[in-house]
Image 1 (cartoon, rainbow, N blue to C red):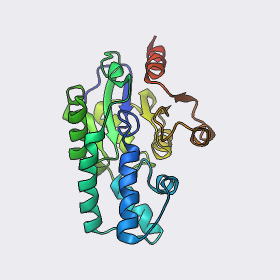
Image 2: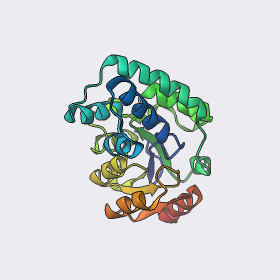
Image 3: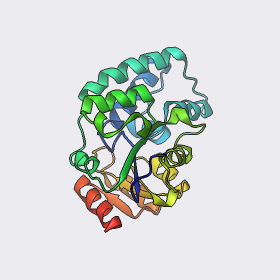
Length: 225
């Protein structure tokens, strides 16, 4: 139990800490066409796979009759590790990491070794000790189910009502709502910053929608002021 602050920020990673979600989805799109002849546009890939753990992605594709084998996953890992070199942090996010008014952790659909590597590349690993990093590998059901966020809160020593989830994906925001946590939708990355997607988020009843991390920080600080 790590509780020492009045509120817990639970961070998603891709599309929030770094504008990377489009990289991973593009790799899925590439391999679906190359290996299985499935020529989906990016919007379709995002609809079926966006914001989800690899396990949940595979389960969703299986429901559509699309079988992902180990060779597919092995090649996907190679593409993902190559894509990491293109990563950059979201402007203003480090300023929130430096804030001492909140406990903070990461709860991501990405696997642990990949998440730790991403933090290392961005120079953010010193902000998150290993016990403050949670992945979908640790729970039975990934996003859009609430398991991961509830698990992170429990391990950090917080009740759901004292947690603020910063997410970008519909799956992640749905998981936050199901967990009974305050959902902050960060839609500043180009993949999500367009009217159609913003309207989908609003239609979920999400009130806290942001396009700049400086505004996220202001909103967070107003909660405890």
